Length: 335
Image 1 (tube, rainbow, N blue to C red):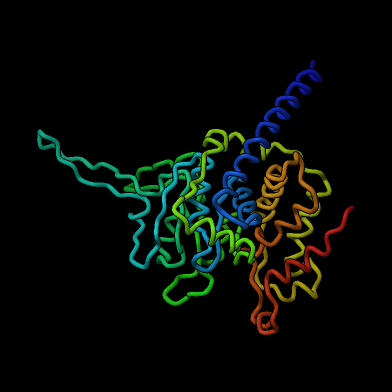
Image 2: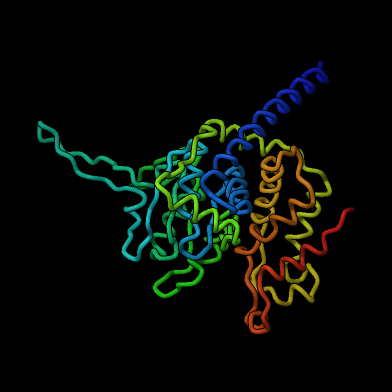
């Protein structure tokens, strides 16, 4: 009887996985119709959302970061909002506030007016331009999935995701996110310049009289179902050990001293959790039902680089966080 139940459960999971693979393939195609040549960025953004996390998009202006977030919202059927972060932005501008209302019989009461954070997909544009107080209000909500105003708790929508953008060049007048707040982003997604062929396609297809818009390929409910599926995908012992080896080898006192001597701040257990979820999601996005070592290597940098810092001496010697991570991944070998 138990074997029959187990077989039935496995069949249900398999059917759910097959449907998810079809939906994800359609979603990638729909995003590719409006976002040209950024396959890795699109993949990492999808992996972030499928893992149930938040993403930090880092890139110079004009690389379609805003358009990508808008496309993701439409394709995945999410209610999306955008907030432009500025130095004078206050927490209430994001969370909402209470307003005093008076009824016809002159009775007064407070009513909570929801802010833009009550969206399934929130784009925090140039998050590092807001004050630490405003950043903290958003980042706390990202972690706890609810806010408190005047002592009252207000739950955020489900699903709830934040995709924040940051300009890596203009640092004047900004408030860089502290390490503890950066740790709340599942992945840091670097958006780079397109290649020549892609840029030519952008010129030809975006300067005409027709504007192509993204088409829905999933609903919010289907996204939540797929997120649950990601957590049920099997992970082999080899992949689990590789994740542990990678994260722990970055910590001073545990890894190779030739590498860890350059590291001032190393990733914690949340990094391993993020990598475990992200490898499962990447496998599903690529049409597979179980992650591999290749997924661990491919996601090591976007999951770890904002969770690490180098010593002053290492930076003076020209070391970089991506370079250190690349050396760490070379130590991953099949068991």
